[in-house]
Image 1 (cartoon, rainbow over the protein chains, first blue to last red):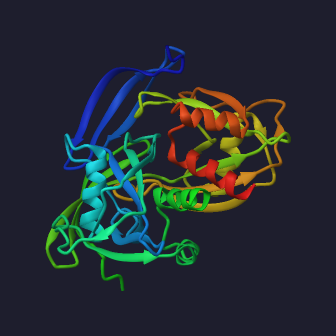
Image 2: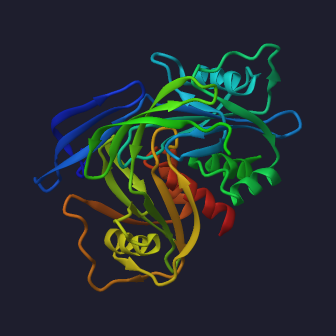
Length: 179
Length: 179
């Protein structure tokens, strides 16, 4: 029993989209009163810390419409329905970087923004990557630039705010603590 | 000029809520084709790393409806319109923990989930906190439990998945790297 639980009394469906669904739930609070919760449902995602043979981190620059700017991040992508997260991770690594691996190791999972969204990310790492002869196609609305960066370069990008993505900042700290 | 830029051609307003607004934008891609972007607008937020005199981290447990479970996190909260982030940080610290400080130091800012949301978080730290004689009221729909935790306790919570919030996991790594 979770004494802080907020029980759902009613769910109002606001929007069913390609990636997100939005609902507004009426909930019963622990004190018996009612309130509303705006909820963004997301299919979940993966992200990959991938190090090359010369210890560079594979990173991709892409336009992030919510930021209205480009953002340098570790490779990542949404889960497809029924797809095992570790397979999503390998697929996204291949599509976004042109590298593959058969040595993906699970690190942890986390909620990116649990106040309003159920987006749940699974993080993997590998230091065993090989370049594909033929790079698979990206999604048709996806445009990325590939970088292979050392820590000094990454710290410079953080300073210049070219990296402002929380999962990537977490990954960089993880590398500093563990590699 | 950002060559990866996605220009907005049209914005469709889907939902205007208490915390989030949702739009679907038609965008022009770098190759001239069009696509849609689902966007969740958020007012932005703050989070605080607050250490007590005996080097414990102030943490709050609260129910997170998107997770359908309780979550242990560092104190955090949304920006009020026109409020300086550092003042939001002190206010949220006071409301959620009953401690205050006049020594908040800025660490960094980040996007929690830049694929679909513009939520931008400002992170602060302090190791100078004092207990308020009278704890200010929380929002009327907010229920939290306060913890003062050392690193061993925090690592145990991470292992048990009682901490799965990305900003909190980032903050814990930050402490390990910097304090």
